[in-house]
Length: 352
Image (cartoon, rainbow, N blue to C red):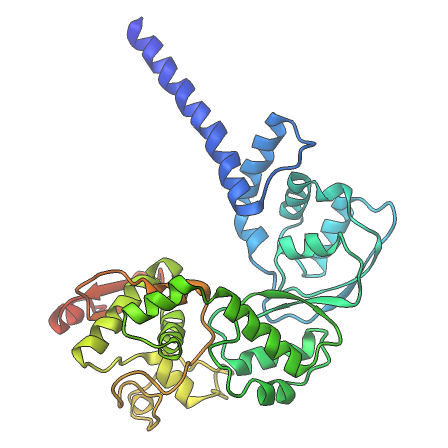
């Protein structure tokens, strides 16, 4: 009998922990729940939010074109969500409704004419449905984009900026065009856009970051250059400090960085693959003569090769402390890497 009571107590404690942890996780990722929800509803919608996370945080189509979208007076959130999914603007109508109800935005959608991009997250679209100011648009710069990729996204952004005008304005700013989502007026010019992106970088360049760069023996420009490489190498964000440690170890030892993304940057646009990041690279590609080719030239390339996220910058300022000098993609398709201290160990990590 005593054991049974202990078992019941353990079950009760587990249930209580779930009731506490699930809403806390949802609040951390999606903000506080609507005060209109009961405790039971808060737990229920928090659990569903976590279940639908990928449909809420991931855009329907990163490279999709903007679309006009109208909301009629009296239209239900279910009808709106269904049409958004049918138009390819969101991935999952049910996930959209759950997010609206959880945040309380389901009761404050305003009728009107909107213009949405399928590159926006559910949170962004939900927020825009609360504001009919047609003079503003959401513009997103993804981590790891080079300036040409930002330029390529402009024709469908709703901004009156040509790709060439942006590239001319941003010519000296590669690496400092901070990846983020921006609310911009539709009349924003190329010079103004570049100023906004670089100002956002300055806002994130804290004293702690600068001190971290200095501790690694790097200037801000050198640190951003290395972070731009780390950004392109790390498929999984959590590995950025490990990858940063490998490159810092190589720099300290006088080894070449030998990073594929630097070669990809040097090669430029791949007409066959229609990408700025040629993959896979051939042996001939690795011999391409460019100061950005870190297989041929020691040290850092002359400038950043992409625009790194805050996480990549932090990884360079505060890298993991490791003995690793090598890494390569694992053979399991997860995007993770296998790390090694020696070249022999690196060879042993090769796929069969």
